[in-house]
Image 1 (cartoon, one colour):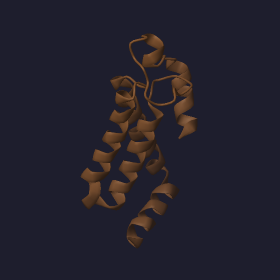
Image 2 (cartoon, one colour):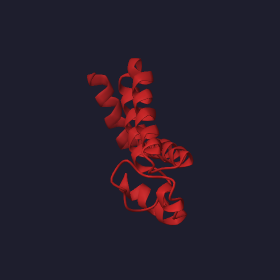
Image 3 (cartoon, helix red, strand yellow):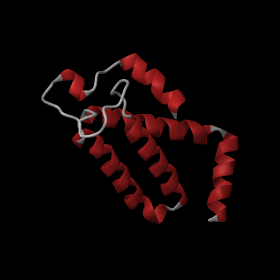
Image 4 (cartoon, helix red, strand yellow):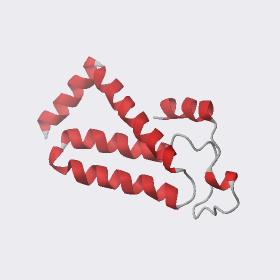
Length: 115
């Protein structure tokens, strides 16, 4: 995930909300690095996507939790809402890219069969 995320963060170089305005006081230790796209959101949505393909009856629960985790980053003052959208998009692209690889798709199908 880091290999996908870090080049995007460097490319967009968006400061975090607390760096833009002193009115935002983060309630978490301020993370280092750029704000866009949100890595926590990418990670949460990536996992929710894969898990929902394996356990489709839990799809809504997986994505609800991913969204809660993503929104917590905005509420904590360390991301802008659009950072979350970038993280969601990155997660979807990463899942599609991984599953486009026939070997990965076959392994994933084998895991699904075991369940």
